Length: 408
Image 1 (cartoon, rainbow, N blue to C red):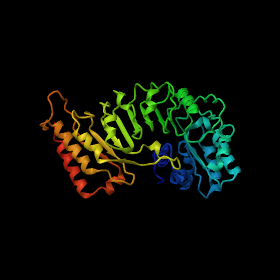
Image 2 (image 1 turned 135 degrees about the vertical axis):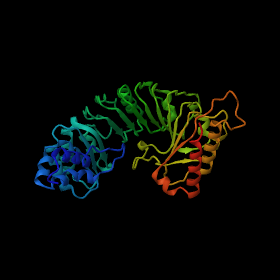
Image 3 (image 1 turned 30 degrees about the horizontal axis):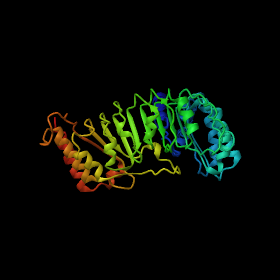
């Protein structure tokens, strides 16, 4: 390796230590990514000298909650701070009941000194350390009032905390000019309405995962939101998102949805218990190109009290197969996730064959004034579903997709 030029070594360094993708709201500690720059620097004197002058490989500040080597974390933090310079960083910090206050204070105080360099952050707290953690985030009292740190490069924010029943007037939200993703699982309408309203004009993704419980928001105008994830469809009455393209929604409460129209929504994700009633309530979404049956990433929160599952009944696909004129005529792709339960493949295949017969003009019951639907020629299965899928289902799906590609 002595003959390898420095510019080639830099490409190797950055490939092994590139920006980490923090999966919101849950991100796991990546130990290989954390030690990668140190391993590279330990190869030789030349590699060490090159690594020390390459700040982009020292940008992962990952400090997990349950990990034994805390002394090494403190030593690693000191090296990272000295070598990252002014580059943006990815932060993952967790604390639990076994941690000492000096350790938490040392790590977090150092991270807050670099807050202007935060590119992404995932801060995980244990209930026994909540008050200490929130004090360090300048949140006063025992979750009586929420104040966010001044982090001008923060792009994503998730709130998953409980508030006291009797609260003073909410504090004015801290300006977060780079914020684009806001997810809230905190059932506190006053705080969340204030935060949504304050950041609404700049957000491109908004996620609200708690029921409305009789109280309405807004109205909240979100002109740039293209992705919306909701547990309760009633939020659509007060969230105005004219450029919405991707909608993820729980089928647990779709009341009033049959009167709502979203002409630009092309991607629909359904989670919860997906049954035949969902077809009736969602039939006005005429531009759907991709249907996903899976729990969105923002719902999968450890300890969040939200079931990280979805289920779909045979009646759902049966309704899609028999409804005339066809619902979602532009649909061309179906994505299926897997959370411990195999979907009803037989009814799915019946729907696909029925839809493609309409697309090919082979349905004798089709009427002249109907527009032909698109051909369903793409089915994406999660890795877990590919493993658990029965052989007969795999064979039949391949046959259906092969026939679909012959339809003009």
